[in-house]
Image 1 (cartoon, rainbow over the protein chains, first blue to last red):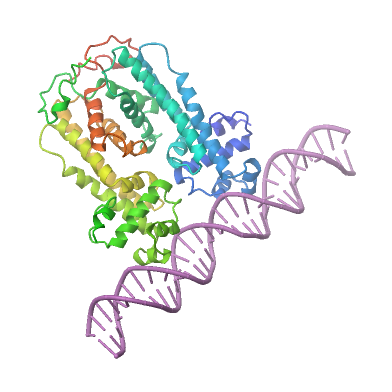
Image 2: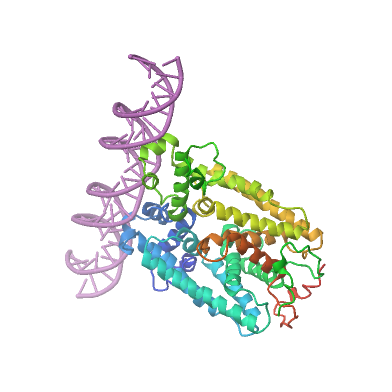
Length: 224
Length: 224
DNA sequence: GCCGGGCTTGACCGATCGGTCGGTGAAAAC
DNA sequence: GTTTTCACCGACCGATCGGTCAAGCCCGGC
């Protein structure tokens, strides 16, 4: 079937699955993303696929398994997807590549991404939730490693590494809430803009004499 | 009742409401935040309050009204809350105050915040959803005004104003996903750190000669 | 022709959903 | 002392939930 590639959109790493399974995963991801896990019924999924509800249970044992294939099956690959797109070079450029690659992943698997990061952020299944957090941690720790590299190389200031990672990931993770695929910029372009802002800062070149309302933040530009 | 102040925690601008109503709103917000709107039943709310389900319908006409009081009733005040905490002074310091005030709001009305920004991001009620977006827009436009001020004053570079606003709001809006109230930093302190990172940038003072992988980003520090 | 097996279905189940109803008991109003 | 008011409850409703099941359909191998 020629539509396999389009149906595959939004569902990562499901190469061995049949077209029907891919269709179910794609539709389910889209529904989970827009109406949430509890807000999406098995009847909704069946209707969206144009099949009977029983058929869902032929291909999946229950609703949770569909969730698992959508959410866990997609976050599984994020770390590998991004890691393979980090080039050799200066650490700061690795961070930039990290952001762009994550944005590309978001663009490619948008519904699964939203379903995974929004609809299921509080997973009823404890062990599966933990597993997802572990993967998420591995992803985040990878970024922290890049940040530490950049600090060691003297490319960026001696900032708080976990907090810096959170800032970078926040800019990417919140994108799904305002990104409009019909508007101008691609997620990758947006990631580049954010990298520029975070890396170079908003402040203009001239040092503007700011009234130091917070004495603890003087001498910021001197360090390192 | 002396516990009125504690029960009021997490529910903004409900001065005229009775203790019981405040309790219901607080518990509902907490449940909505952790289990989502569809995932929280009226029985759950009643059980959490230690009352019968019927009593919920005595105080509220239906589940949606509870949602409205939690989500709409809290986002209503965010703009005013923040606006009143912006001091006179340099525009960049206004942006800093904006971030700190938003973080304070998050800390004070955490459950209602999470319920409003996460559990209900796709509101089934169209008109109410639009109303919330309008309020959200007013809040965001207020920030954009501050950014434009800072650009006009020459304090920050000639960046893309909407995109800059999104970056700042992303750092704050994503906080609820990783913030741990038992850990060290307060939301306000986190907001200050993020402001420092975004305003001053991560880059170290020394100009590191980066291989220009992106020719469009040369001369960045020259502008303005 | 027919037969076996995977894809597919509609009828159905107990549980739970949001919501309703009639009523209780105590305090306020008269 | 009677009536009105109001916070509150247990029982119940139709609808929908996730999930089951026996039976049909379709198609290649014999």
